[in-house]
Image (cartoon, rainbow, N blue to C red; front, side, top):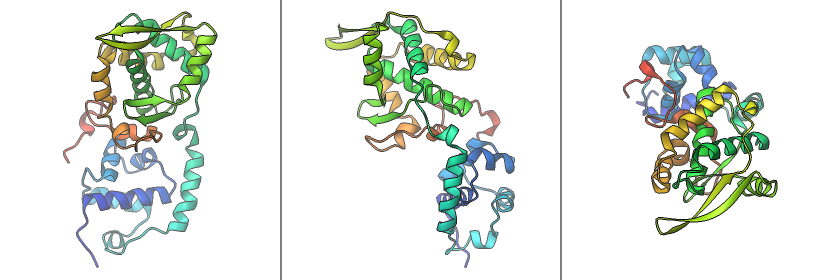
Length: 267
C-alpha cells in the first residue's frame, strides 16, 4: 500500500539504506551525482527528492520504489548492524578523532601568539577559537586538525583533556596563566612563553586557523558563546555529551565554511 511520505520519513529511509550498504554520505552523493550537502539536507528531511533523484538512489541502494513508498517498508536490522560496523571501521580514520597532543599544543600556542594581547581573549574566547578551528577544518577537508574531542557544556563547546594539556604546558614553561579584571569580572588568560612550531602545521591548517582568528578573535566572550550555541554541531548534541564532528556537514549559512554556490537549493 502506497502512502504519502513526509520528507523526514524519506530522509530516514535513505539514511538507513545508505548505512546498510556501508556507504558514507560522500560515497553516495558521488554515485548519484549530487553534492554532499544536498544529500545531507535530504537525510535531515529539510529537502525534497524529485523522481529522477529517487530513481538514481534506488539503483545505488538497490530498493524497489514501490516498496520504498509503502507504509510497511523496513530495513533488515541484522544486516544493518553488520554493515554499519564495517562502515565504521572503514571510516575510522575520518570519523573517530584521535587527539594529537603536540599538534594541539602548537595550535594553542599559535592562537595565543596572535591573540593573547587582546583584552577580550580569556578562556571562553580561546576555547571557542579552538573549537571553530577544529570543526571548520573538518568540514572543509574531512580530516581532523588536532583530533581534540569537544563536549557540550553550558557555556559552549570545551575540548576534553584540556586541563591536562594546559597543566603540562604550564609545567614546561610554554605558557603562563594570569588573572585579570575585565569589565568588573575576573578573567583567566594565558600568555605564550614559547613560539609555535609552524612546521607542524600544514598550510591549509594555518589558513583555517587564521580565518577563525580574523573573524572571531575580537568578539566578546558572550558574543562568541552565543554564536557557538547556534552552530549545528552544538545544537544537535546533548548536554554533557561529546560533539560529533560529522554534524559539521549539516551546517547552514553563516556557519558553513564550504562555498556551495549553486549547490544550495530551495527546500
